[in-house]
Picture (cartoon, one colour):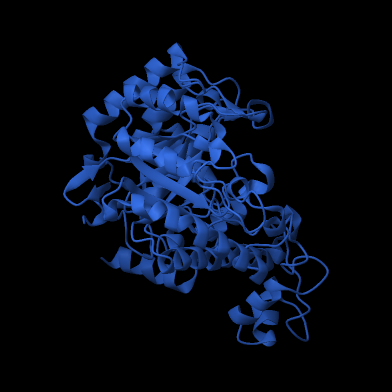
Length: 470
């Protein structure tokens, strides 16, 4: 059977290169009698990669009982949908969670799992039981076994959710996981007291600083430790998910996704655990939300290029969830928005994306394809043209022509958005650039600008010194 690997910014099935240009279709939210009509429109658009979540909460119709063949409800027929995708010649990205968010109750997990955070032993038992049920169903469709699934996503936009699990994480009145993290980070309470300028007796006493008022800059070391904790949490959850997927037989590349800021996830470190880590991007209509929005969009894609083997947008806005056009100020998404977003992604260096959602569903609209397999003519024609252009220019082969790089500290960028003035000045001056990672040496350029904050860790300082000496 063929080996599946990511190289040259494509997924390869043996000797077959597959550019990652695709779209999301949720079988479990569409009447099965419409699946073929919908997929025919996707094929007509020129897209041959389809992604879908699998919803744990929906498929576990009773505690401990799963339906993946549509016996209890026809929309649960995961096997039927995978068979249809195979018959119609699509490549598949499968996203079994356990969390999927996706505007579904409890973000896609049963109530019992949502009551505890993602490193809680109770959650890990429940999530593993679900994965033991679902992974054997999809494994026969892996490309390594002659099927059409080329990527498997573990989890979704990982976050410790401090607003939901405050006490359990040790971020409230009681000690918990945060204090355990501090004890592992610092050799002694005396060392923590030196860094924090505090006088705690033991590690049960420190409390996290969750926000930093401008007049309280002395609290910055504590504030950054809160972000270090969030990143540590995400890496622990990532490692559990990927290890569990591998242990249960997933032998194709494993993907993970992030939200488009550094505050929740350490993107580069996550790709040391998974095979591919991309981000999710949902800009407002033609980037009208703020003067900085378009620049921030470009920055997110540029940062992907710093660490990623395939700069990929895991969820690239196509339509919006119910209410999102108001709550997120997205607005009505017009044809020119999609032109501008796609060209901007290519400009910044994206080598592929997954349009989310390519097809409307119960609480999602303004997609180019409707739930019944009909099309929105104004949008469908634009999406088809974007696909045509993508294939013509083959972005995985392009080389960015710039002599300029900017180096940042992702941790400080997460906490304080240091360097934003510099990046905004580059944007206003129409200067293209790459991000340079002082740890890996990726994206090294002759002209390097520093936008990383007021201080750097020792390893980063040494990296910058070596860059200058060379």
